[in-house]
Image (cartoon, rainbow, N blue to C red; front, top):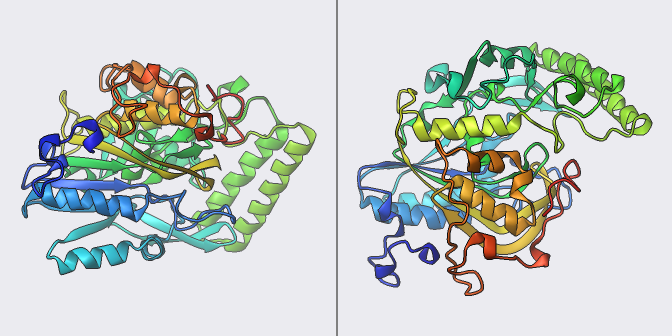
Length: 434
């Protein structure tokens, strides 16, 4: 925080208050880590490259406490994937111990799971839903023509979220309506401290400050991940017409419908049939792309930008305003990042880097360059940097750093070491690198 000039006049003294520039006593502060799941699906890796490390969370909360001066509220929350066991994660990453430490100091931190429900099951089948929050805990916000999906309604699309019913997703996005279910506690925040864990990402190319806002959503069925069908027919699940891929999509929908009815055995059978169709497609057509996990995904970036519009302009009642409704600061934990098959099966990439700033698009631009990726080939960053309505367009901003090699330079002037470069997700390999 010193490197980017936050309260440098008091640095090294007990009065140093780096977050005081944005946090006022009495504020409600949301600290938003990446808690995507309680386990890394890569058996050779752990949580350090999957979720925001608790040492980073702890340091940020310390400075939130200093800035609030005993008045205000701190919320620590996220919306993990539907099958994540947040209680297990809080134990594994020592969040519970951190909360006990603060409690002993007289500081209350509210832990929040923003999901409407979590899904339970086994063998990749989620046939039981456990309520996490009542429907009254969320607000439905219709972006309408402020949505990044506005203008493409003339092309029939069937929006899809993995493991969710596509028909329900269609109820959120149709006929000019683009609705997102947002947890009210997110909207109640005066300040958001965003703590992403940068990783390679199968749908978006990479995940960083912009993508981390997916974790403010209550009902994940409202989050279009891809558009069903081949790109040649107006979808973006995969490039070309493929009957085996189409059979996989249909079987996956049968699985989802069975899960929603609590039918475990039919859902399990559908899961294995789906896997068979996908395997045959890879063997006979050489088509390795599926469910939007490739560089041709034209859906997920729109969802990402929509959520960043909401977090910036939606007031506490979910009404869009012309001016920013809350302050934001983004601090990305790249001490150990995730490369290869992210976001759920990443491999560790040790960098020892913290990237921070006030503009999500610029922070992600920096992260992409550190990773060795071309931000112009990552739609969420490329589109955000073009959208002056709610994003900074100053792509040549000066970088502050404790490393004299980078400090004071324009981002366009910096060449990061080759050893920092990430191995991209297989669906983006050869199409994302600088």
